[in-house]
Length: 384
Ligand SMILES: [Zn+2]
Image (cartoon, rainbow, N blue to C red):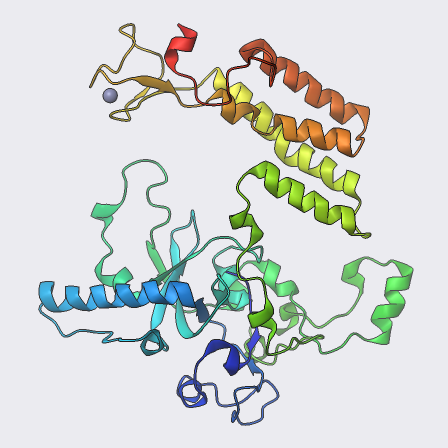
């Protein structure tokens, strides 16, 4: 969910009358809300869903109503026939690998293939604003369909389930990354003077959320230096290229073809950081895990620390496979080599990659050599 602090009613398809009922009585300058092209400051627990997701949420609301009527013998709750009927209803929003759900409220819908929420709500869920995946669950769904009996028994099973529900988000209690959000309408002359002196950012006075914490000012009057047009959401890319590009190599090629065009980016430094902080640790970690890995039965998923002498699953006689494959280990190797050559990185980094390549080759044979077995999961027979 990307962050949004202000919106135009025309962008989210909700009428002025409905917005007023939801508490949006004035625009961000304090003028009474009368037209759909007035810019409005978003309340910090409101969310804007995308149209495609809204259709799904609408179907879920009908399922919940059916459940309430047929199973619990109660009255239906949502009674929604269109997505607009769900505006004003509460949702629980939860980030991957966490177990605290936060209460939000739907205020409208837009066409971009993401949900939009206030930076406080995003920060509360310990996301930052780089387009991570999130979930939105209708509040009634989360309440009546939650049971610890459904949770997986394996480690991590309690993640991705809203075990805790947070109803009130206080900015002073959320991740402090959002405290650095600027709230001024313009930069002072002092700010520009200091940029010339290259002082550390902390020495420059700019209005930020941090100075408003624990006061009403933290919740409204958060301003901005540069606005966008009412067409901004409509004209925005509808889907992140990260989801349309298939392989990691495609994503990296695209990212670096963009950096090749940008004067401000030190491409060699970007490549070096990617290799040092992602590829080399990944290659080393996977290679070392390979020799300590467990084996898994393809039929019943039983795990074995060592292959049983009988050579198959002792519970169901199913086939046993490696849990870490050759393909998984070397998947970034050629990408790392290509990047280091393309940007003529320093010999130290290139040699580290070459040493890793040699180490991988001592285990598996030549990487990418002619006649090499295609990069895929091996079966046990290759090692017996
Ligand atoms: Zn088995």
